[in-house]
Image (tube, rainbow, N blue to C red; front, side, top):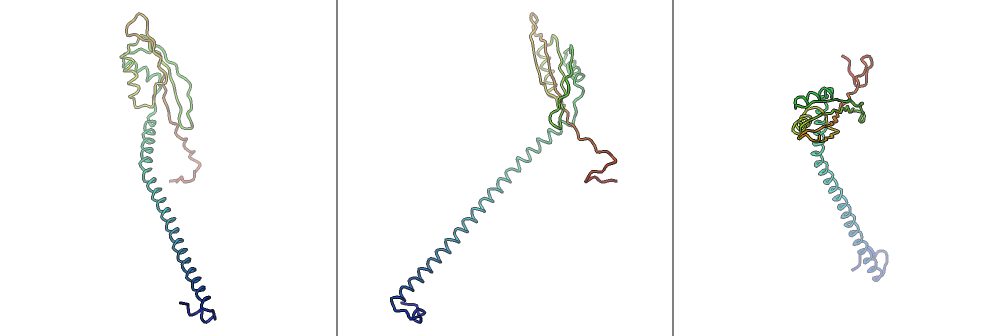
Length: 194
């Protein structure tokens, strides 16, 4: 069974069979190559789609984390909106409310923390204090709405006196530095004048 086109070229029957077999092999190879190429293209597109789905799922999952970070950031900013009062006076008032007597207080120099925060510190000494009153004093400091923390606590038992302690308490207050307002005469990009 020879292809009629081969008869016009003047090929003998053996050459016609060989040419027909060659054409069939070439056609099969082209079909296999086309199918293989299409399957590779489909597989690469499927892997791209899977990759996009994974990326979208990661973005959707990260939204909760972003909201959580933002809420933490907002709560920290809200806490630092209220500036702590002068520490020596505030600590003495809180100690008096808890029936403690401040023997002396020492203010430490301010320490900057980065560009936005400054730490103010004060160390006070309490003499002949009871443990219940000390714990109530520390609890009052912790429950205050001010950004303060107890940075030093040294408790020494007084010999020969029951429930009597000498205490050194270091308290730090953290203040957020607000950016300085721009001079009224100069206009910054984005500023609107009334």
